[in-house]
Image (cartoon, rainbow, N blue to C red; front, top):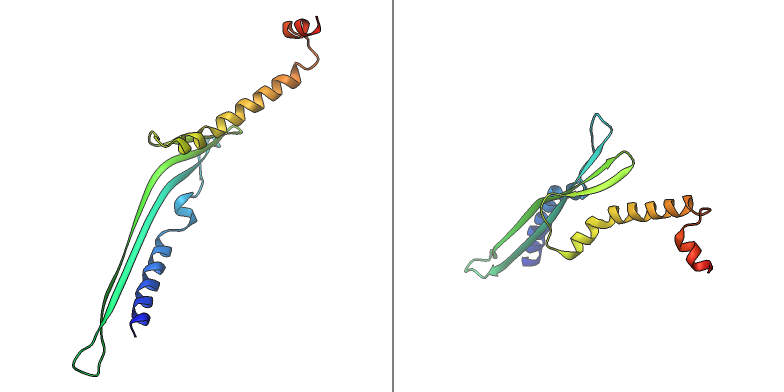
Length: 137
């Protein structure tokens, strides 16, 4: 009987968490502005839950059960993805101290710089500069 009661509490707790947190909680719905800019909110979601219970043998034939379950959810907005004029940028809300988060935030800028270097290289392919003259000597 205890397994059924504990399982029921855990199932109810998980259902409530699923109802509070879904993919749209982490990456929100896009917001379109009048100038054509699209803003997408990004949040960090942390959650935890616990449950437990126990059977108590009473003097009667009825089996007694005691238990509890609880959950907590933290949703913190961390950034906005801004798409404007064909460019995508991540705009952090707070200063990040995590190296991985900093690296992820830099990806759009790095991609833009690489694309610029490739574009410059293609445009100057047929032009010789001072470096080309040194290499030919």
